[in-house]
Amino acid sequence: MIESLLPAVSNVLAASDASWWDQIFDFSDYGKLLALLVNTVIAGAVLGVVGGLVGVFVNYRDVGFAVHGVSELSFAGASAGLLLGVGVVEGSLVGSVLAALLIGVFGVHAATRNSIIAVMMPFGLGLGILCLSLYDGRAANKFGLLTGQIVAVDDPQLGYLIGISVVVVVALALAWRPLLFASVDPQVAAARGVPVRALSIGFMLLLGMAVAVSVQIVGALLVLSLLVTPAAAAMRVASSPLVVTALSVAFGVTSAVGGILLALGASIPISPYITTISFTIYLVCVIVGALRRRVTRRTTEQPASA
Image (cartoon, rainbow, N blue to C red):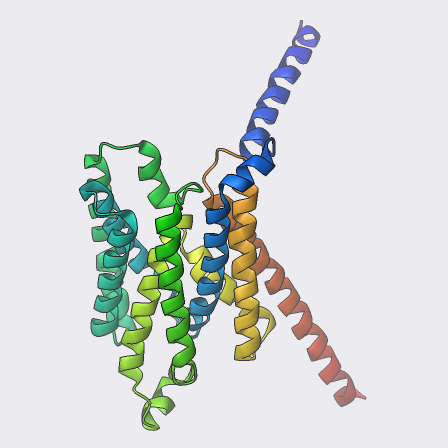
C-alpha cells in the first residue's frame, strides 16, 4: 500500500517544487519583458549610484537607523499621495524631507536622534497603513510601496528620479571634503571651523531625497539594502574613502540592476532579489576582510618571532 503511494507523493512534491521554483525564476519571454522595462533598469542603475554615494556617509556618521525612520515617513507620504491623487513620488519626497529635517534639526545627539526616530517610525507606518486602507485602487500599488514593484517606473517618474538623483550627487560632490571631515571626526572638524551642524542638516536633506527615490524601487521596508549595505560591505575590504566610495557604488549598482534583471520574469516582488544580492556581497566582503586581516597579522608576526 505504502509502496503504491510513494510515486503519487513523489509526483506531488515534484509539482510543488516546480511551482515554487517557477515563482522565483521564470525566464520565459525574458527578452520581451526586458524591452518593456528599460525604465526600471535605468532607475535601478541610478539608485545604485546614489545609494552607494549616500551610504558611505550614512555609515561614517552612523545614522543607519535614521534611514529606516525616514523611509517610514516616506512610505506615509507616498501612501497619502496615492490616496489623494497627488502622486507617489511627490508624496514620498514630502514625507522624506520632513522626516530628514526633524532628525537633522532636533537630533544633534545620538540619544535624542534615536528617540525621535523611534517615535516617528510607528507614526509613519500607521499613517501609511491608514491611507492605504482608504485607497480604492489596485492592491498591487499598495503592496509595492512596502516591498517595491518592478513595473512602477514610467517616463515621468524616471524623470523625477534622475532629476532628484542629479541634485543629490552634485550636492555631495560640492560638499565632499568638509562633509567627509565632519562625518569622520566631528569634534576636530568643529574646532577647525567646519560648519558641522549645517552640514548635518544638509546631509539629512540629501538622505531624505535619496530615500524618496529608492522607495519607488525597493519599497519602504527594505530601503536599507541600497542605502546602507553596499557601503558597509565596501568598508569591510577597504579603508581609503575613495576606494570605499567606488566599491560602494559598484556594489549598489550590482545589487539594484542584478535584482531587477532576476525579478523580470517572476511574480515575486523585486525586493527579495535586491536584498539577497546585497546581503551576499556583504557576506563575501566580511569573509574577504577577515582573511586579509589574518594574512596581514601572520605577515607582521613572522619577522618579530624570527
